[in-house]
Length: 83
Image (cartoon, rainbow, N blue to C red; front, side, top):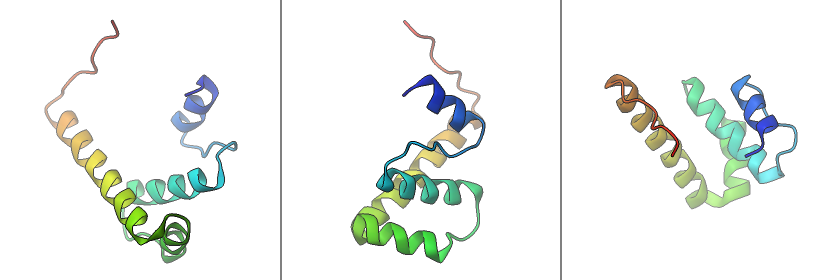
C-alpha cells in the first residue's frame, strides 16, 4: 500500500484512485464500521457488484475484523515490532 493511500485512510478519507469494485467495498466497510444499519443503496450496489455470496462474505469479513480488533484492544495487545 502506498504511503499516500495510507495517509488518506488515516485521515478518514476515501482514496480517489480506487477501482469501481474497491470503491463499493470501501463504502460497505466504511458504513458498517460507523455503526447502525447498512444503508440499502450501499447494500444493493454491493450485491450488484459482488453478488449475494460475495456481499455476504464481505459483511462477514468486516465483522470478523471488528471482533478481532476489539478483542486485541480490550486486552491491550501491542502491535508486533518489525523485524
